[in-house]
Length: 204
Image (cartoon, rainbow, N blue to C red; front, side, top):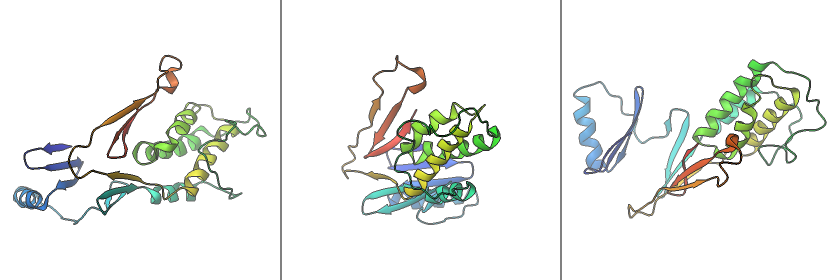
């Protein structure tokens, strides 16, 4: 990310894709100058960046990945079709399922990898669940796999949840950081989240 504060211009770059944010009076001259150096393809106002859908609505920026959720749902067999209203079972595990039966690690790892990608970009609500499930990646049981499916069912029920960034219009937005007050209690549950304009921008 490059920020030119004197001209109010932000440039976000990923490999050969990039986005520009600022006022048109600054963006257009920059595009014209850059096009003289390299070949550019102007796709117009941003609607998608990497795997994220982006929309500007009445002073707000809305970011979602519902199509990624649909891809994950289609790949995993959800035979009972039950809707889940929380990322993990309220008791932590499905006690009716044996914890000794093993499942194929690669299948579980592939699913958790895709869920982890979602959780780090637009779905921080499942970050804790994915963090817990990833701890069982090397030797997952049937119960662990059922918990992975539980997360997917929750995402299916909430696929349209979005990150919404809404500025004040004054340019005085402040970065706010919240963290777990009990870091010394359990190193596996250390959590810190940064917010800007009403939505998370970083979580670790």
